[in-house]
Length: 242
Image 1 (cartoon, helix red, strand yellow):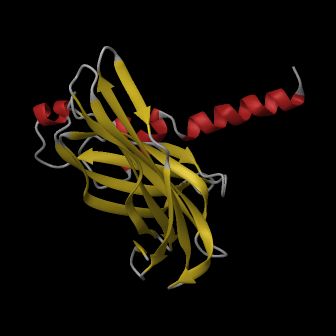
Image 2 (image 1 turned 60 degrees about the vertical axis):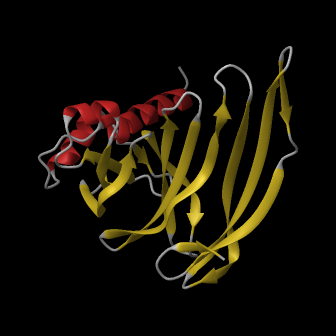
């Protein structure tokens, strides 16, 4: 067994321990909550930007949510977003958002933490939270991914980008063959220009339209992708399309 292999195994064990169920449970005990958080919607990830920091999202059903609504995914969620310093063993940034996510006909299926290099200033890096929704209609299928960006500020977190659609995949069909579908994907990159102290974000968007016709057999036509590019600028509160 090589030295590098041993180091890799120990690193994986450490990362798992940082985001284990007991780790999340212990953090939840430090919050003013008597509710149980939803484990499937409470992601955790070490921040490569600083290995001492771990990003944690704890998602709670709003007060008054019935067991039936929770089972069917028909509810609103309150969310704590935290940055935890494992070296100092304490929460260093915290943000509570009441009614942050809504789940109904389009169900909040999962959430992930995005630790790409969102260097919004020369010295400050944000992180992202991506919410993934799935539609419940068979003849109107839909999948949506929405990205939010949070910038650490003293002991809190500043939400600078809220629910920006990075994927929208949906359409309408007859349940057998014929239908029309549209896939829109967006990726973000940093610009050298800035507004109100934060770099602009360049959005590259691709739109793919697909049509399926039923004759003797199902005939699928995928149209040429339409590509667009535009800029998001920070207005002092949130990023907005320029």
